[in-house]
Length: 78
Image 1 (cartoon, rainbow, N blue to C red):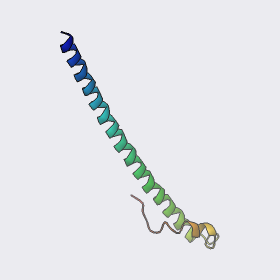
Image 2: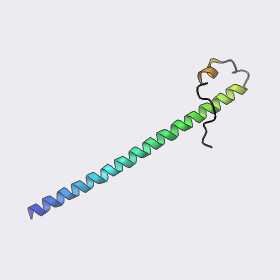
Image 3: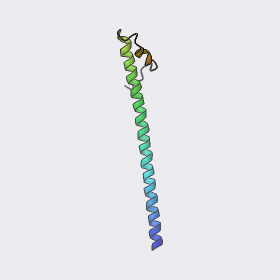
Image 4: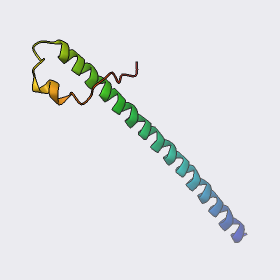
């Protein structure tokens, strides 16, 4: 009877461990996806900001315009 209980406890612990591992894997994937989307959104916002600065004569010779020049092109997702 003690052996059966010990085996059952080991099986339950193993199932719990596997369940926690799958939850951890899913959470890791969600965080990576969120970071990726956030990065794309950041690029999109900088692209829009650069475009707005480029058409505004007040900022056309600003160092700020040159500093965000690395984000060329339209990287917006919509």
